[in-house]
Length: 487
Ligand SMILES: Cc1cc2nc3c(=O)[nH]c(=O)nc-3n(C[C@H](O)[C@H](O)[C@H](O)COP(=O)(O)OP(=O)(O)OC[C@H]3O[C@@H](n4cnc5c(N)ncnc54)[C@H](O)[C@@H]3O)c2cc1C
Image (cartoon, rainbow, N blue to C red; front, side, top):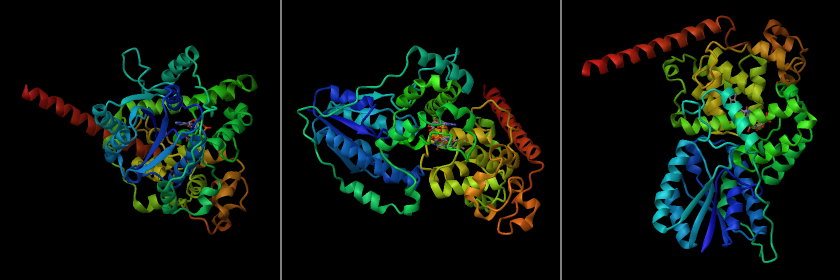
């Protein structure tokens, strides 16, 4: 009999509850990863993120091999083929128990339900672990027994729960005397890596795998962490952890992040608390995605905002994607995304707000473009961030919240260092004129003039959201009315 660890977005050996539990079973352990390229296509997974996952799998295969655990990688196509492929595999290897880390988005849950149905007749026991979050999505409820939809009260309960039950890490598995290392090679993996068409310049700045993720965590907690609160909004500074890619692919455990940060409170209480708050945001959006599965179908969290008539045009969308809107901070942000596959959090907010409020383009187009480009693309965090920026989401803030791209630029890149690093056409401008180069067009002839003016945005957005609310209320009233008529 064999025990199987089914790897998904948890590509590590250390701090891995499912793997530790599998090893504790005392039976021979195998590991499996099912590659689903068609599902990646359907989910708009960026080529750079695919590279990160595939390259991390190579390291994982070698690390597991040293523990005597063979990692098989099978090409499955899409999620629909997963139950049958798993059932065949379990039959072939006499698998008695399957261990995995739980995933919460709709398609993943449907896949996993189908897997339960396929494996039950074979007598395979399935064990899931909430190892991708600090607090499992259904464990915190409001006084009314409903999921939290506002961050601050959620965060309070989240903090209290973790103070009562701090996260723990399973023992790091190591080879024993009787371990016979197995070598790792995978044609499926080699083929998938060679079919990725990515310029080398895109992968150059990134290191895949668990080892690099652990080193990055150590560098962050021993480096910028105490000053995180002060520096995290300044894109020109190396003030944030850059761990989102590792956390979303699971090359690093979020429990390890929490524990390492928590242990350094004496070095900088505010920095640590603020960073841990970001881990709470991560859990918050994951529980939102788990508890409100319609979000995975592209629907807004606030139903009335589904009636907003987004009136932006293709030309503006293209200019936004390519970093040619004429607003330096927005363009610098988009050029950072396009050239590195990553964007600073402040800039994600600025560029998303600009697309949805200034260009008045449907947030779903921006959400999709981010997923197609980001190395850390994560359905829950990306959807949460986009809906927050578009004012269609969980956040209780009023819909007229609009960022001025100029003001944001002056506040968060006051000297223009970040803009200069991304936009060579503006590199010669001083720290004052770089935020509004159109005021002196002779100074930057190669840089576009603004695609839209800044005035009147708040009024236009407010009117459009009010119109949507009216349509929604009328439809709602009509529905009540109709229900009344049929009674
Ligand atoms: C429009 C928009 C889209 C976004 N898309 C994604 C995405 O696809 N994937 C993604 O991981 N994050 C996304 N975020 C959240 C955030 O921007 C990134 O997690 C962060 O910039 C990553 O950098 P870091 O690792 O240095 O973060 P740090 O500042 O060091 O934060 C530590 C970790 O906390 C988590 N985190 C931080 N901020 C948030 C947040 N607002 N929501 C959820 N988790 C958070 C991340 O896992 C991050 O690695 C998005 C935010 C916005 C506004």
